[in-house]
Amino acid sequence: MQENQGIKPATWGIIGIVVVIIIALGFYMFGGSKTVAPTTDGTDQSDNSGTAASVNRIIVSDQFPGNVVYVSSVQLAAPGWVVIYTDAAGVPGKIIGQQWFAKGINPGKVNLTQSTVEGGTYYAVLANENGDNAFDATKDLPLKDAAGNVIMKIFHATSAAAEIKG
Image (cartoon, rainbow, N blue to C red; front, side, top):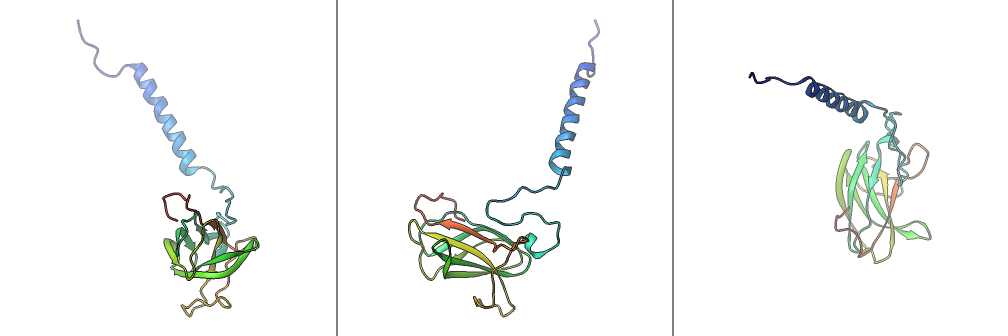
């Protein structure tokens, strides 16, 4: 009796189906539509307009109360500032910290002149750099998205914040 050597036709069929599925998944994940879902922080995630507003965004999570704000990610089209504000009846109030960030995508932290307090609401706002490399709230103005909204992220100081900083 002779042993059957090689791959059986049924096995080739299964291999063919797996290959087709892998190709379809690859096309779906990497070659499909470039549509971008809207974000919850009011920033424009698309990058098809070529404007600076399309590549400026910030990600900040709720923080433990203290004198530092950890920023998960800042994306800037040009060097600029992350400015931390207190809450003044639902809008940014007093500036309590600012930090310069380079062009591109960067994580970082902002040291504060006044500590955040438990239950407090704060704003992390992106601002331009006017060229003198020193923050001046009258000259280094908040950046806006394509719709004309200030690019900012609201966060809270809470001892129940996740262990991940930023």
